[in-house]
Length: 353
Image 1 (cartoon, rainbow, N blue to C red):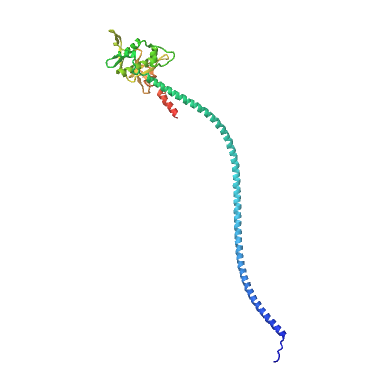
Image 2: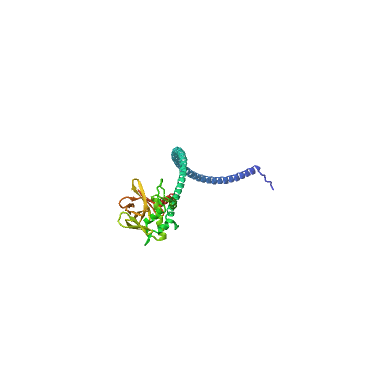
């Protein structure tokens, strides 16, 4: 076998060529992959450009919006500054007003303290006044009770009452001159007073008489007692202004009389009537059935009547200005008739308030 001679150079070259070929193939593959990657990158780059363009548009839009917001904020800032300035001005004015109010309040507080002191002083005066009014009311009530307590003798046995029994005529008629005579026989007489004062029945008895109003109240009590205890319904008085024969009483067969006529008076609304008689003087007598008669001698004085204006007039001239009944005293004033009961009612209204 002939030996084959190897040319190592050619072998090496061949191998080198193979290596080059392999490397070329590998590079070709890598180039293809690079181109493909490059194409993908280009495509991604285009998408990125598009997104970037969109971003620019969005940024531009946001920039415009921000500019609008800035402008709006600037306008609001300007308006707010104006409001703040207005508030500051108003605050300053308020401070001035608060200062004025504080000064006014201090003045008011001083006046209040002064008024409070005046109020406390007036309140004390008011309490004193109310206390005085209450005492005055109690005094008036006592006065009213005084008239009730002195309206009659409460059935108590008295010497002059038994004497007055002898003056009762047939039909329940009480002879008033006879009653006056019985009182005179027992020592009762007219007694003037330095100071005008209405005596009670007991005081009249103790003093053996009194002035005209005392006589009127005392004789009124006798009449009330005769009405209550003896059934008297009428009074017979002597009428010195008429002609007739008026028998007063009979004693030991002797008849005492007035050569004058008489007048019968029904016991109706028996009261003490006081009236002016001239010269700055006044007189009190009894009135029943609008007939005024003298309790000290049982004589007729005059007729009386009420006019449309509420005045109690005396026929022939004059007027009654005080009436005393069993419970109260009534006085004719320029504003009308007033009594203790009226004052008590007014006082009670004041006290209620």
